[in-house]
Amino acid sequence: MELLVNKDRWNALTKSQQKVIEMATHASMVWSIAYGEGAQAPIIKENAEKFSVKNMYWSDEMLAAFEKAWKEVLAEQRGKDEFFNKVWQDLDNFRAQYRTWGSLGFLPRKKTE
Image 1 (spheres, rainbow, N blue to C red):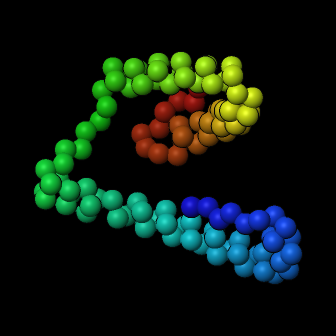
Image 2: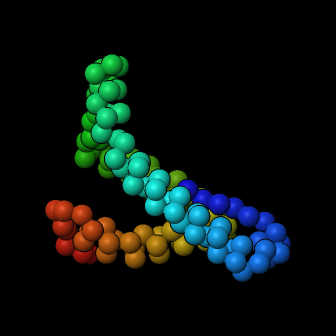
């Protein structure tokens, strides 16, 4: 879901070449998201029937335990790694902005915090 290009090589391309690559990358992402969503149900069903896979949700207790452990690791890493802290801040800011879409984009809708 990403394309990484050396900046010097990218800058050496013409604007038209850059646009073609951008459009192709965007089209690939849209196709992947659309196809991926539609392909999930048959695979989930097949795994359940062929391999007795049980699809389950984590319990609220397990999710709380995971969150608690994550917050401990997060605090530790933020305290000792400046780059980790910068990346976390960027991600945390994005997640705060995304919360609006997350609360309104799917049914049933939830109130925005």
